[in-house]
Length: 255
Length: 276
Image (tube, rainbow over all chains, first blue to last red; front, side, top):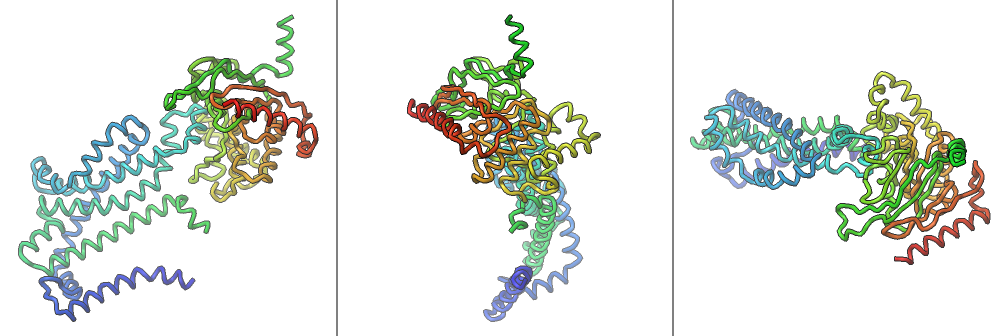
């Protein structure tokens, strides 16, 4: 029981320790707050700019979740198609990989040509950057249905659709939720990139303006807010994953 | 005269139920385009328990796929239930060495899976759920897993999962049960236990069973008729009727007659292996 408690406490202790170490290093080495502000300075800035930060953070959160939802819907659909058809899978894979290889920063200008500056480019960037892992994972889950299982069902006269929906999709769920944890962080990166380059609000935009004005503590405060939001969204996805696909974590429950 | 003979055969349930006539099959993806089976002919009568034994890689699994309509022969004819097989046969149940349970479904829901596919159960399942659940629980009791339906398959041992897999293969009352080394991965005690389960299921359900196995004792204990296959490309090298009276007790596996039969089968397989 003692080790269990230690495991629960460890993340908090290590995080706190990290910041304390940072604070001490800043004090001892007398680092200029222009180079690396101490955590206390950053927290001060967070408090000072709290209303501004909250406003922009909410906007970023909204952009991220919109782009992420699009990615989930599209990723599931495309993943199901790719997972059930070897032909389409083989045919479109190079395209998908090529598209995924393009750094999405480079796509933002095109989004601005198309949609102008506003909420569309951050949402689109978040979507474009985060759908790929979902597609790949859902497709993998569906395509790796045991051949014996497929034989059992096909011998009963099951259609391809039956097999995909009865076996493939439920089977792909652990892969799907695993990919969501990756996708949500990517979507977040995407929306911030979009805001930095093509928006007048959001943490990304705030970062751009703060760094242009050399407001170093505000830049760090914005980064801190980004990190906290990111952890929160990751944790939310992970808890949904655990509640929906508990059967996939069975080894822990049996042991 | 001849019609009288057929009538007699029908009365005794001796019509051939599964027939393969001079079947040759090459997989489209085979690298060497060597047939998996060549000129294979066999007949299994209705209600009969047939076993197919042979060296590994002799095309036994191919035979299963041909008989259930998952593959179609390049040459020859496959007839099941009096009809030429041109699509998955639908009246078959299958069980494999790997029990392939779906881990997100309870044992009971795993057994009910075929009913979600096969008509007329598919459209009746929702409204007559209780009736089907009772039937599944009856099957579970028959294989010695009474009251285990609510557990998840991964909470069951390998032998128990294999029993569940048999229940799943039988829930839609198939006319034909195809077993591909279903007991291959089990320890010998569990295996003998399941032989008896299989024997009792066959006696109770009157289903035609085709069992593919490596285990000659298993074939000799369970089957009415044993086919020995040659090495790839597979064909039938020997057919042997097994006359031991039913119901059979495990003790018969220690009689000299039984040992002689297993020895004879072993001879056929050894020859088949050498012929490569």
